[in-house]
Image (cartoon, rainbow, N blue to C red; front, side):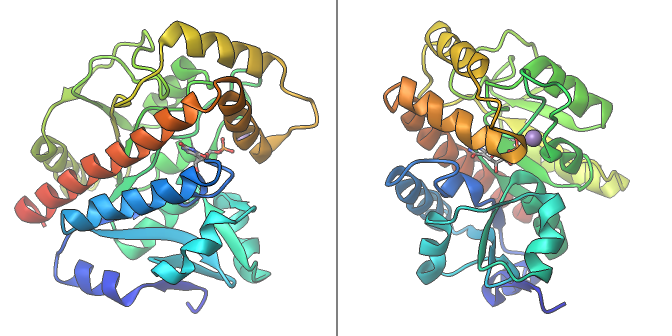
Length: 299
Ligand code: PSU
Ligand code: MN
């Protein structure tokens, strides 16, 4: 396939059983975080992985090719990208050779699986929307389709978290709280939803992932980590309610998530952005720990 390319360094790492963590790219574009915070988050995410000798594999569409692993000189393409590529968009982005497209959790999981990378980190997964419960992110079905472990801070809290968890359960995706008993609420700690399973060590996550893969289970695993710089739950809830209730009817489909993120950032005067930056970097750190434990003990 000449429209999917795995970076040589990543191929080599996977071949020699060295740790690799896959990353999406929408969160690092301005559709996920405003400039210059998107660049700072990207640099720090990559930095934290390199520091632990774990190779980052950023997924993105560049010059009509789906890439697993991009070089530093190409970061600018992601930072300024305006086109979000979810799983449904992937064939057209490649067939029509889009110059640049940033991957969502859904399309990144597909590409990570293609490359054979079992561990993936993001900010928050998509989910069932509050304002329209039939708007269900393709992230959820893809999370159950590939035996990949995804580290996130739960689902973005402008979503219906109860319905999101119900959907994941129906699809057979295991959710593990990372040192927490409640499903994290992305910008804040508490969602009021108690999780069935909690883990406290990267080795536990690695063992559960290995067991699942050895069983031949095709569903993924979600490790949900509380945000390290949470906002006050009542404060952010009020803002989210007002933003969701005043969603302009012109915002449809995949434009809704970037719009809500932007509007919440505006109304919190950037506080939501700081919380978002911190949790993305924290999730990369956790994913690196799990990748190290997995390659050391199980691969
Ligand atoms: N996490 C963040 N910011 C983001 C996203 C996740 O902290 O911008 C992106 C992810 O790429 C996720 C997507 O897959 O939002 C979900 O979009 P939708 O609801 O349209 O499926
Ligand atoms: Mn949607």
